[in-house]
Amino acid sequence: PMPRLKGRNRTSTFLKSGKEPKTFTVKIVRGLNLASKDPNGKSDPYVKVYAQSLGQPRVKLGSSSRKKETLNPEWVKDPKKATFQGVGSKLIMEIWDHDRFSSNDFMG
Image 1 (cartoon, helix red, strand yellow):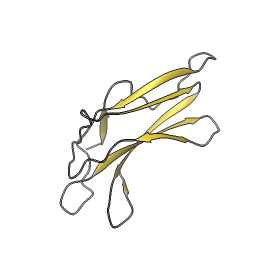
Image 2: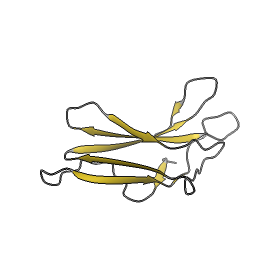
Image 3: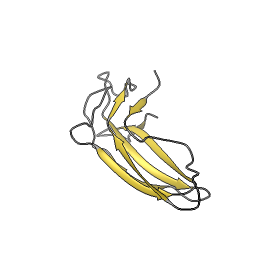
Image 4: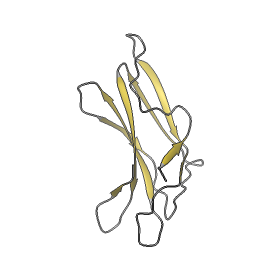
């Protein structure tokens, strides 16, 4: 299944609304049906959040806490909020599996 994030105010498209920068707050709430990346059949997922303006390198806004051994993580009790401003900016959210003894695995 395709990894999905659920939450309010999520987008991955270019924000094109006038000339004035707009402020957006992103709240990461949960992930559903994530891929198993660990030998135990689970993953230790966390989310990285970036903003990128056209023609510019992306800027890291923050990351969520790591949830151990789950394919359906929830950040309801400790949601990560990231705020950014931009016109022509793109919001990028990546899901990663934390690995203790090797490099982390990209999940989507």
